[in-house]
Amino acid sequence: MRSPGATANRNGTGGFTLIELLTVISIIGVLAGMLLPVLARAKRQAKISQVKVDISNFANAISSYYSTYNRYPTSTDTANSVAGKANAPDFTYGTFNVFTARPLPSIRNEFGNGFDTNNAEVIAILRDMETYGNGTRTVNFGHAKNPQKINFLNAKDVSDARLPGVGPDGVYRDTWGNPFIVSMDMNYDDRCRDSFYRRASVSGQGTSGLIKADANNNDSYEARMPVMVWSLGPDGKADPGAPANAGANKDNVLSWK
Image 1 (cartoon, rainbow, N blue to C red):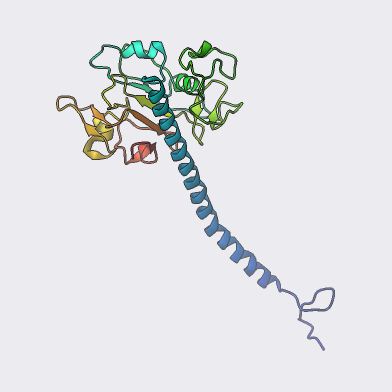
Image 2 (cartoon, rainbow, N blue to C red; image 1 turned 180 degrees about the horizontal axis):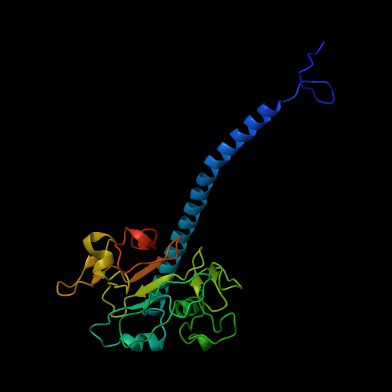
């Protein structure tokens, strides 16, 4: 015979007391609290790994274009902006005129005569696009920059400029929706100087893996390779006053490291 204080379910079998149920719920809550950060870190790392793959593919596509045409995939305006200028050896496609879901740092081409643009023209040439998704003509209209009509880059087309992939504006964005930054060796010396990472404040003390090229110019850090591609990383930020391995720059994803 059951004691009056015993609990039972409708079938007469023993059940959980309220205290036991609360204990189980508390344990589940603790386990969930421990698991969620692990899942978040795994998701973040998966995105970083994907961006590394995309950056590698992007750089390889530019190299393949160069092997095919013996020049880099740039517009005539871009090439003319640095042609013959000793202080403008290369060109950086940054965040100029790029729409995103959140504010972007100002990464601009700081060489040449002030001409600036983003990676859309590079993508149009590499993918043999005559018009962007919004109908605007590209610098490759009439296959002017890719006469063999080769698609050098396999990238996803998206209908929203806030999404990762090639948007209707032609800009190639990373998995966080930020534009890939690209610098190219426009004086063809097999070295590349990025407008952002050339700075001593960013790359000094070997923090970015770049080499100082000019003893008389503190802001002359460069890569011993013709193409540099990088991402602003998960936070979508870059700080010209911080070392490459600290602050907002710490999570940037770089093709040369």
